[in-house]
Length: 352
Image (cartoon, rainbow, N blue to C red; front, side, top):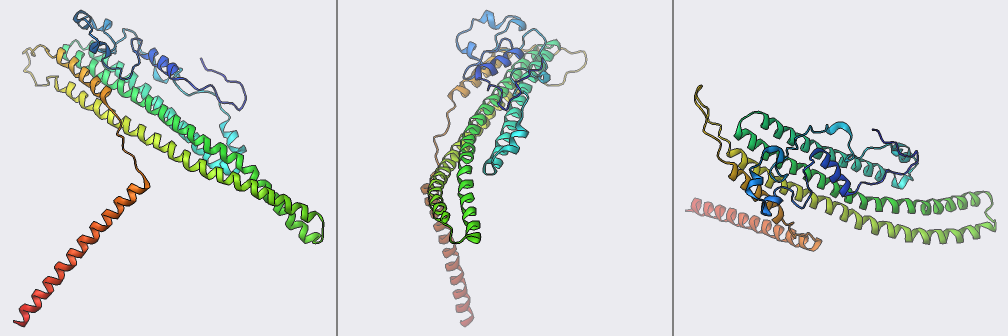
């Protein structure tokens, strides 16, 4: 069903994290969101009888098979950021000062939507892989494909988390845009008074109104000076905050996806792909326990991950740059001394 929002310039209500998780639950009914959603139940002491139950009854921690048909990720579920928008019209009505940043923020919104879509596609692909592996009738392929699907689904969760981080960063850029919009009238007012003074001086140089206008211009310049100072302060602060948050989220996403990919490769190593001669039987798959342990290890690594408490300050970078420059100059001095010694040695040899 296509949602229709009221025909105003307001944006549809922002989706909460719980609503996003609810949308993912449509794809994975057994899914339960947590800090690292891979093997919580296994680490929590799940009984062996549950772990050995048929695939359709497996816990989300060990399997992503729901026993039902997955919904198409392109159906426009509630996890998307769809909805009618007058953004193109609003872009034309923005003050000149904030127009460029308005377009940038709109582009960030498109980026967020793309990452959310990528996350939903990962979840859909993971479930399709698991269901395909189950119908092959091969125990090894069935188990490994299911657990690789768990890894892929967690990668999809990382995309969703990253999208939310970009949305937080985007909110800080909005603070700059709003400040720019508030400064524009001050600039326009000052320019208007200055223009009136210029015209009046040409027409009536002796007009008494010139004194009044010049006093108004002084007040307008004072107000504009305060507004401009506020703008530059907010711009510097929020620009640093916005992209500090985005870069930190990028590092987290990259490092966690590396963790997931490495454990995914461990799972693949458990699948014996040695060719068999026609008529011979392949050795029975006997690595189910090891595969479950890989998921346990993966969850532990994700839970233990911590961001580096590394900060970059202007003083530190200046100090580092100075040390590097000194080191380069030292190497150049050594090279020059070495060249001088070689020339001296050559001159001594020729004289001899």
